[in-house]
Length: 257
Image (cartoon, rainbow, N blue to C red; front, side):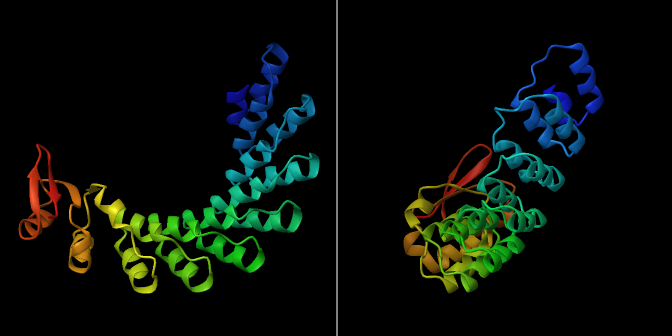
């Protein structure tokens, strides 16, 4: 029944209900919520007892952007929590977020803006800023920087007061987001954790970022290693004039110092 519910196949569910003894537990309803088929959710609700149904049903529909199913749960059942609006923020479902704001009382938590920022949903971040009061934490800028969401990083810097930690620039460097690194270096004071950078082998770095680090922070880069393919001739050619080298079979491990 779970598979039929997940696929939105009401005809198969009707047949199974009439001809089999399969147990229909909460996991079947959760599977139905993953589909976009409201009639399956309605049929399950009408034909089985759901004392064990949890907030996870609405949460699941919200996570996948199934507003019609969320609205049905709101009108028909009592389950629900702030986690549903949080997860809608996490996945950028702005119209659903607005609906939760207008129609539900649970609201969201501080994690709503955090998750929206982490996943690069700038429009959601802006809407939460204008319409909600939960705010965010430094995690919003830290993790949006880590994921390379430069527009979110800039907006948080200019319009929010939470700021970031050194994790923002550190993770942006480790993940090769050069534009983010440049912005944070120019506009923020938190800097980066050179010990974390040096302790991590950076795989296939962008040559511009590597050059910038060595030019601007050479005294903090001693011991930093990069792993890249031999065929990356542009980086290897530059490396020969700037870095020590240890060779492996399939790649070059480059070490400063």
